[in-house]
Image 1 (spheres, rainbow, N blue to C red):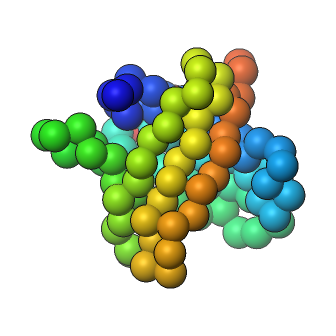
Image 2 (cartoon, rainbow, N blue to C red):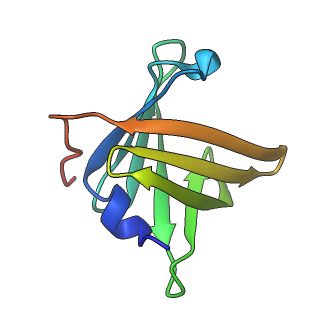
Length: 104
């Protein structure tokens, strides 16, 4: 199991095909726990991400906190499995090369 802090902190990820609904959206995981989600089809959103003492990842968007499973396929491809109030959502992401998430 990969440590979410090592995989996510200071990186930006883009929604990968075939997820046409949110294609081009980016998730920037800042080292201070800030999460920025920017979609070409919507309004940018700021939330947070955190890893607890047991290594469990959670994200908070629009004031709602939920657990997230991180599936690492390789250094440049991950899947976030969000256990949102409305159900489980999987987002396939690819690393944005040359665009690290800076510390805030």
